[in-house]
Length: 330
Image: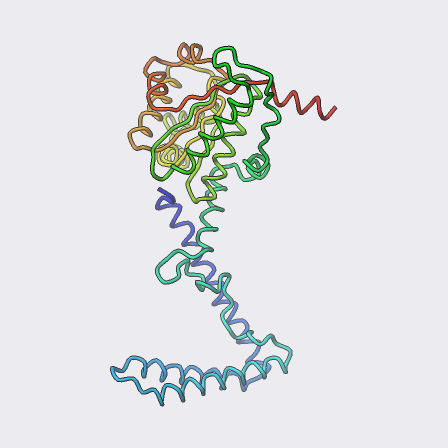
């Protein structure tokens, strides 16, 4: 999906503002320079006239190389003369040139019909802002992830695998999820005790996908259902638009599911969100401290059925990392 229409329009409005600001600044520079050096106004008028003649020759069916060469040479001479006069009078040589934030695309966002590198960066910045995760993802990502918190000598009784091996397998699956995001629809479900890295792992995935200009929205379970209640029972336009993002974003992260006050409304909204996103093949990541039996009891059977049939399920196993960090700090 990348950007939806409103996100794309928001970025293009920023480009329009840049263009208007560049034009305003150029006009201000002209007033100052012309006021101090009237000769510059005459030079610029001559440049405009010569440029028009050059454009007319280019449009003619039969090119006149001699005339074009002569006009081009005169334009270059005028440009050098203007730069020299400007510098001699204390102005930068390019003072009367349009100052673009991105000289490569001249603040249009496109180069030869393709998105400029600055457009991609603008998209990433917007997606970070809308995800609400910018500061967190600077600290929690695959670069700062460590397997050291998952001991090799702690063995899961059911799988026979160590805590570290289980996490290594889970991380490998997450990296595949990222690499195949554009070609294979998939969802992830993380469960296990507190402090085992479920939220951290979700953040790692979010950062990688945002950097690839995918739209990611993160909600704690409490925040998500508070938002859906506002848009369902209120007349909050902003809440309605946010609800649309919940259904349409490339990746929705629901963190700490099971910590909210669960009732019939919450269960029905969760099923609606999951069902709509699965049908639209929009990926979702869910993390919960509940065991699978407890999760099945907390939510409706149809919600649990959607999870087991449409999500890759991973149990995180080990010791509380938050407690380990506190002990190390003390």
